[in-house]
Image (cartoon, rainbow, N blue to C red; front, side, top):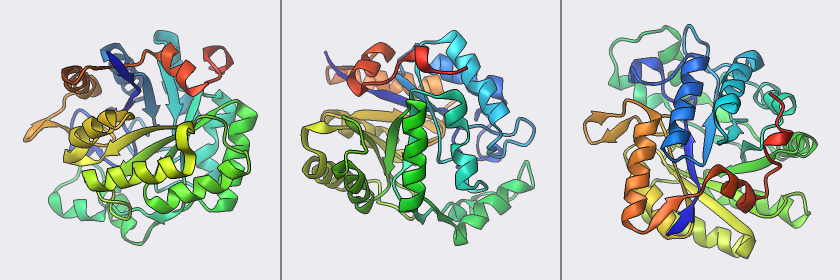
Length: 307
């Protein structure tokens, strides 16, 4: 069978507790869902931290430490720590965990952008926590910041920590931002990027847009390209499947999508991983193991991780 990298984004910073009772909030729940996702076939797990009482995204490195140490002790899955954080965090807060834990992978958004979640507010009349509607509504006037100066700083932290960037491109221009650093020799081979589709403020979640992202990346990085795709919401599985057929990887998880199928909530990240594994198998594909993923991406390995 052909193989692909299967990412699982466990909790994120977009969905709030009111939206789904199965969204993991406490550190142990986030870690346990990540471990279960790995057992179901995930090659890598992408982790954010949340306040265990309220569920609001938090930059607290102690909380992140609880999550990643529990995963590391109970699974050989590749751990990818976010530097996207949440809308309530500064750049310094978003990158603080990387030099502490030295993960094999960490995400890195490739530019500044409008990042809009506010349309979701009108779907709910009541909220579990006061922070939720204010957090979402605040995105109406929010710019996610990653300037070129920020990117230089972030990638410097990555290099010092032995961490490979899992770049996130929300639009075509972000790929050209990456090319700037690639030409200077500041991105190690292979160039690994997630095409993020379906966020208001970025590229739409359609197959033609995904194909255009892939064609653009091919032109900029050639055979040095390794890619995966995120389709936010109901487009998660169609875009993930297309990405695999285009020669890339796929990302699923409760960060991006809360439903297993139309009208049916996913009860865990593992359910979403299991569905993606089943779909991929129908086309003759299976996920890379964590160690195969390490070899494909040239990662530093578990021994270099500080937990």
